[in-house]
Length: 387
Image (cartoon, rainbow, N blue to C red; front, side, top):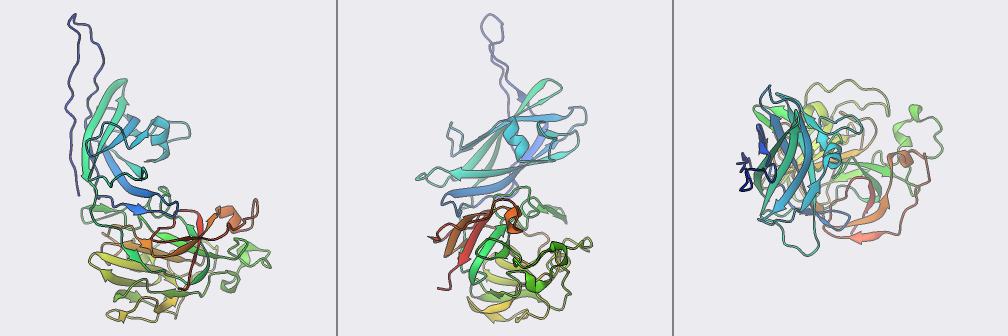
């Protein structure tokens, strides 16, 4: 859903002719939210909205626009659901500013603000969001007020798990706005989309949180068998039809440099893969499967829990893991990532990437917390109960 809203500024003066306050001029920008967000419940137990605000500094003579603050309002409320000051905006904007500097949109350029909203407990899901952005260029104050977007009324689908048992780090998962998932946009045929908005790289770990067996001393010389998750059965998250599948692609050596992908497409990125159509506008993508492991072909009907392949390292992958995502179209290019929740997971706490390789303070699993209808957020370790 697109929204094209321009602010109308109103000057305020006192009767004496002395200006009481400075009202920013309408900003000479295009501002829009290209994709309506959907509410989902994360593994933190809270309800979230994740989406992007696009800002284009249209005229060359405006000068660089510094983003000063942003407020997001819900359903006509005067109290912001989210407030970001200059530092807060700098932390969630692209292009990424220099450390300590404000986010800036240069003349003739576009910037993106990645927005992560957490709804207060007990409040209804908003129907519409409105955005106010204050900015400065060449000492002149501007503002955008409006940029309204309707919150999608569709609930995040509840699906089964893509793997069985074990411990799995949700790497580069939801909430990581500068990850190679949410932070990667694809431009094709007039559209700019985020296919991996809610994608997760599931990395298998042992009880100590390590992805590689402790006996391995040289990380640069690992074999597939050294990785905890390699070869794990990958299963269908729902009944459905195979919309696309491929096998036979070679796998890469772990932690070795790789060539750039030939294209930003399913075939160019996913290696050996399966894409399942599991509902209207719902396509489950499984990437980087092991060569020779894919058990289904396009057009096959599958059942929830059915083994469809094994975890590997084919395609654009630096180490063995399962890339899993839901999108609104079968092809990677041109699709939008949509949220989902797993019907059941066990939560074991957070883990850092350094701990994944046995560095820093040892990781210790918390007692499993049994969760229902939640989406693992970035950096948490989860287990997938068999029943």
